[in-house]
Amino acid sequence: MRYAVISDVHANIDALLPVLDEIERHRADQIVCLGDVVGYNATPNECADILRERNIPAILGNHDAVACAIEEPWGFNPVALAAALWTREQLSPDNLEWVKNLPDALNFGDFVGVHGAPKNHNTYLFSWEDILPHLYFLEEQNTSICLMGHTHTPGIFSSDGVYSVDDDSRFELGRDKCFFINPGSVGQPRDGNPNAAFAILDTDDNTFEQVRVSYPVEKAAKRVLEAKLPEFLAERLALGR
Figure 1: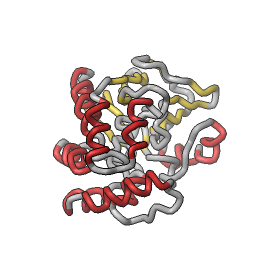
Figure 2: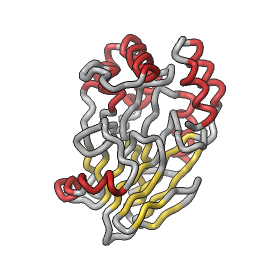
Figure 3: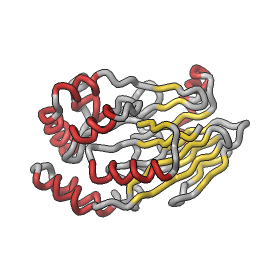
């Protein structure tokens, strides 16, 4: 089965639509979203509408949780706070209810998906040392692969090393090892590359393919400014930071 894995869309419809077009070209059987559908950018309803209309399974991210008011933005920096509270006012009743009911994890048998760390979507996993306390989760879920988002940075983490993922590269996963894998961000990449990121996980041949997609960054940035969200959110899109 070929899974297209997206994460951290962050209300960026201008990035989401080209990514979905590219996913069609890759002939994925299923799309999975690892959370943070909303937050930061200016089109939360448009992005939520698409995921709902296409029945794309999604996980609750930390920005999603704040946007639907099931959590308060404790620890958010001023820019993230302003965007989260703006989003809370913008979401339609239907999308608000949909976000509220997103699960904390999804198990697809061959892999499990979470947003941040297992059982804590606010925790960042940047290294194997960060991941070590969470290995028990794979045993609980009876799988050897955990897909995660939240850091907005692609990477493959395994007991025998941490692998950086080049653009449009394909990686063969060993069947005798466990992996924590981050596909990067659709709507706000932070690895120095402004192109939207997603991945293809093929559970038949056990491979992970990183894919980058260019999109009209200027258009997304203009929407941010027109919505009177913090200017920094528009500027960072072009920097991939």
